[in-house]
Length: 297
Length: 146
Image 1 (cartoon, one colour):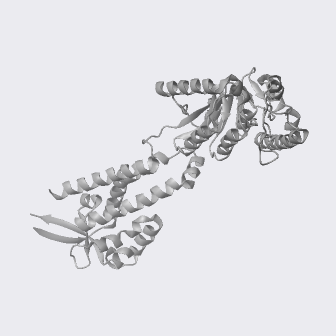
Image 2 (image 1 turned 90 degrees about the vertical axis):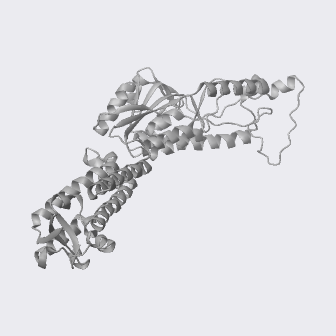
Image 3 (image 1 turned 180 degrees about the vertical axis):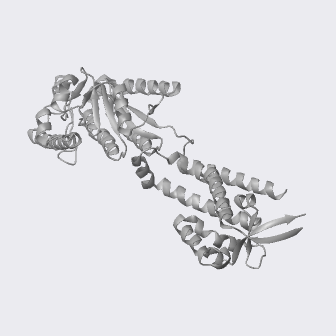
């Protein structure tokens, strides 16, 4: 091999090495493409994505993971959250809120049908909120309501045999009436979550706590009223939100959907699990969601 | 083979360096850095704040040093030097060792150090850079005759 051929081989090896290392560092295909990540938030937000009888659940942890992936992807220049959710559990929602606070690129939310309660808490942490004139927005409040069956059990001569080692171990049990002391304790917890929720929304929307408190009686608002009361920034749809995100970055962005595609097998598995669940537990236990009291936002 | 050693004019060395730099940009810098480039000043700030950028910069530095060191140690010439028929040799006109090749190219890791290194040529004898002086090497013109 003559000298020039050896030099050519050396240069090609260096080039190949640089490309290989590049893949290891960036963990993505080489591209100058600039993208906007569309992350859907559909359904009841729970920490691990558990569903209830009435509504499909979505995992807050999974949404947070998608936000983190989009934030770490150098080709993603902006993130749009496409929200259609009535809210969810406190921690299922908070894990998403915490992920949004770590985002260091423009993030915009668009409320399609419903962005209420915890879903609105999530939206309030983004740089701008879009909603349709008829979208449900707001419903800032905390709910811990549940069904009590103690009267029904009495009618059927069924006794709830209480065996606990702590006075409040079975607080919120549907099989006995809640005492006034227990109710006060529960309301104290709900008030604390409510206060936290209101402060977070106020900070996210750059409004005062008093202003948000006025709007936080649990009622939802229509999008058409929300530009005036400060709950959203613009009337618009997904396209408007994407255009806004593009303006924030100053780039033309191509859309990349972060929606998890469900396989035929996973749908079958879900159907099988749901069937077993309903057969085993019965509709009654589904309605009360087990023995655990759940606080939702 | 007759070998005639001549003093190399500075412009030949500069042009040879530019050719090598262009080649390094294509084969090393481009694959590692192109994905990080942005259009605005904000993109640039984001770029220099990212850990990936610093890691990629270190890799580029190492690979650049490997390029110069290996070619000058093994062949006495980088691609740019081949174009202008110039060669790196020891102070005694012998082939340079790998450690000499490594030391004489260290200044190319930083444009500031390289600038000062080249400034030294103005006061040194025989157009030697400072890092050439401490590595006991020099650059000569070569006319090879079969």
